Length: 219
Ligand SMILES: C[S@@+](CC[C@H](N)C(=O)[O-])C[C@H]1O[C@@H](n2cnc3c(N)ncnc32)[C@H](O)[C@@H]1O
Image (tube, rainbow, N blue to C red; front, top):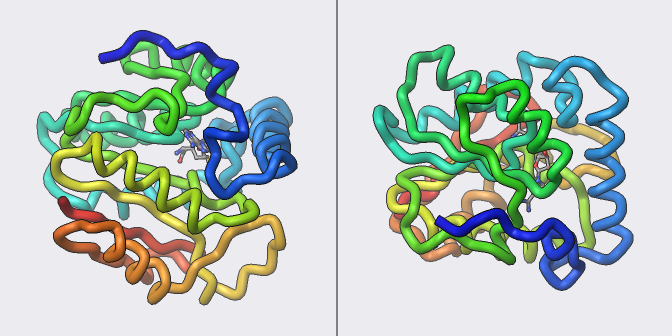
């Protein structure tokens, strides 16, 4: 695996397809504010409640039995998915990555036993097929100029580095949520999009939480 990438290049506009400079500045400011305004770990990464964070982890984990699998948590925040897997006694080899070094520093304090890195996969990918399963929870929730372009670039990259399946979630447009800074998708849109990524099978998980949809992309 590659060593630590330099931080500055993680946040260059050219490495965020579908973003404007304003989007990138907003993303950085938003996650910085969440981290410093709150105390509860789930709120510090933008979730409203711990239940809504956990129910997403539960849905993602249905992707397959993961005993001893090598997994990548993209946009790991404070590493709560690692905490969840340990609590559920799912033994995995875990790596968590996030764009922001200050988030990663805090994750390391909370979970000194896990591997965390500040990394933008679009700049510093891992070698092909490095992980059995990859996960993205909450990574696509912030609205930018062209979220579909961004999601496609990210998921294509994550798929390359994953042997078996990628699981990700997005906010459900059918929920009626009215927050203009959120990116929302319909179940039909997201599963059609998943199928367009050249995978063997795209599977949609709905009705576990009114705000959320999960997609499994099997290679
Ligand atoms: C809503 S938070 C969720 C954090 C964590 N997955 C959880 O559920 O607790 C989304 C996280 O994704 C990170 N993020 C957003 N875009 C990213 C990218 N392109 N690469 C890595 N991390 C990203 C943000 O910094 C933030 O920590």
